[in-house]
Image (cartoon, rainbow, N blue to C red; front, side):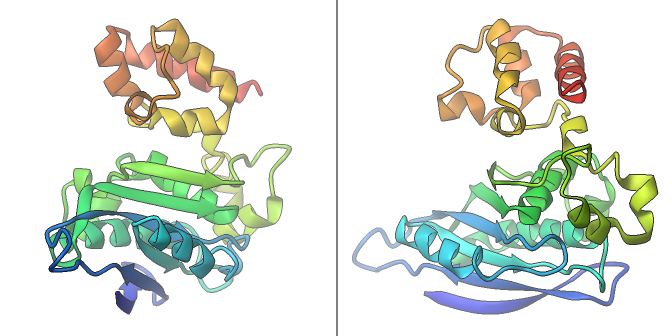
Length: 253
């Protein structure tokens, strides 16, 4: 196994995150050209720490299932605030794709997993990887290089509304809290690029909107793994209208 600890340095901050990599070796006897999916693990900790409980134990389970795994120990308060961790996650995804051949990674199977506040980071990345154009510009890559192929959200922090985990948002935003707290409420951030399964995880009630356009196999990964835009193209539906309905529904919850 190829184990490394890499420094993650991004623009506009002196903070350095750490990326712990667990890349499985290929055997010359068994599928020497095998490529594997990679899971990017973002532990929780309320944006004030990075928990060990949701780090290496998670990586070990995915390694046992045949995945490569990396753990992003992103920067947190009080040393760093938004968008530092988001930038660090974008750097990580771009790095994995850039080095896919070297580490035998399938570049079409880069999955971001997050737990609690790390789930908010993963979900934020899922809705902002393209919308926040500075991410690709700073890394000097095509935005498509930053697209996650899937998200795995475990008990994520999502809303900054009445049921919010308030300390997570205060740690994340610092002095920007009043200006950005509504934007960071991710149930308000569904776009045409959002993956359908991520919408369903935000609120299972959104399934009705997809069923109404003819998607009757939402349990199938090939369907739920599509973006809303891809599904609308297949089913001949006005994408902007559907996104508007979903956001209105989520905002009313």
